[in-house]
Amino acid sequence: MFDNILLGLSALSDVTMLAAIAAGVLGGVMIGVLPGLSSTMGVALLIPVTFSMPPQVGLAMLGGIYLSSTYSGSISAILLNIPGTSAAVATLLDGHPMSKRGQSTRAISLATFGSCIGGLISVVALLFIAPPLAEFSLMFGSPEYFLLAVFGITVIASLSAGAMEKGLIAGAIGLILSTIGNHPLTGEMRYTLGLPSLYDGIPLVVSLIGLYSIPEVIDMIAKRNQSERPLIDTDASNPFTFLPEVLSQKINLLRSSLIGIVVGIIPGVGCSVGGFLSYDAAKRISKKPKEFGNGSPEGVIACETANNAVTGGTLIPLLTLGIPGNPVTAVLLGGIMIHGLRPGAELFTLNAEITYGFILSLFVANLLFVPVGLFIAKYCVRIIQVPRSILAPTIMTLAVVGAYSIRSSIEDIAIMLFVGAVGFIFQLFNVPRAPLVLGLVLGTLAEGELARSLALVHGDVLAFATQLVTRPISFVILLFCFYALYQGIVQHRKKSKILDD
Image (cartoon, rainbow, N blue to C red):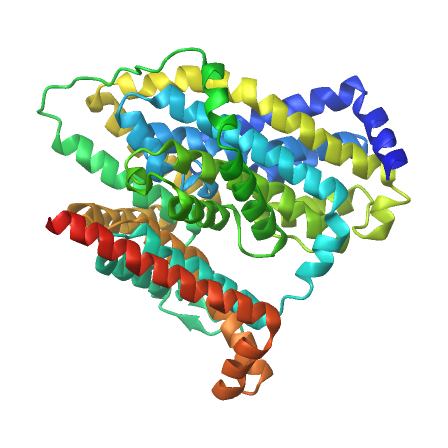
């Protein structure tokens, strides 16, 4: 093991390797900041560029893009309430309220340092405990995946404390929208209205752009006649002064990192779910749960630590078993194989120098996106001082371009506008939007695994229910689901009682 680490350090000492990491980090930060440009797109576009590079150099560049774009989506989420990537959806719950209070620099700094620490911890996990953790993930069958998706959906109860009925309605709408497209087993088309763009379901990134950007634009237009007082960033000091605040939350950092790693190991779940689960856990344990949703630093740190910890977690089954944990690692798998490498034992033995060089390059990438991200964010913070008459059409233009650029489809712009109209109605009636995102993200996973589980028992519902309580892992997850629902109901009653008083 340590001999292999030394080989990796030797590969990392190459100037070309360091330059590739720097280029990947810079490109990834820029990709993540712009809504509509996803980590998957960034990695896919850069794979042809790496053809002529040595394998470890090419992989280092792709890894830098993956990590930094996952982090930098938080910048636009905090400043504009529009997540740059799906990983930053949970971050805007507290990040944007902090920005509205004039704490943009503080919020971005907390997100940056939290992302860095979560990413570093996940790389340590990747380096030392990849094989046993990957073997554990193989113990998950369809019932476990189904319950894991259900557990993610139960977070709705916590996110909607004080407005649980509205939250459940939003979550239900998200689940309904997730059924659009082909059936996961039969391939039957449902609710597509004959539109080819809906055959694979509603595109997640397009939905996020519409759900969060359109209501903001409408709100700006509605307030165009009000006297404009641009926000002043009262915390515009050296971002590194906020590092002690992050380090003081050791339990939050460790818990969020572990949640992110576990979520990353399990294929098909994703960064956004890791952020929500970590946010929910932080809120339950926090001494100041009332601040969550209103600008809680704990919430920002929990979300960003977890979603960047997911990145290292997703690479564990990828490198050891060849199983991609999300769309980005699926593309990355293609990049690995293009360079003549095969995931599995050979990667850690015959190609140890390349593999460990790549893993150690992730350490450098996690450290490097801190100064790069903070430098770019320093200029992005000025966005909040731009007059609404300029900002509204700019955001709308970015939304349209972002939605179109994903698949070069005019229909995607229409989908974005439709989801945006739904988001505006939600905003009008104070319905939380996060539950809809959770329902949309986890609905497809839950439906697919439920269908597979029932197919394995030939449609016998009783046999399926028996599996849920007799399989050890599924039974533990089931208990977590009930506990999460119970806690959500308790929080809802407490908050409702406070409001009544």
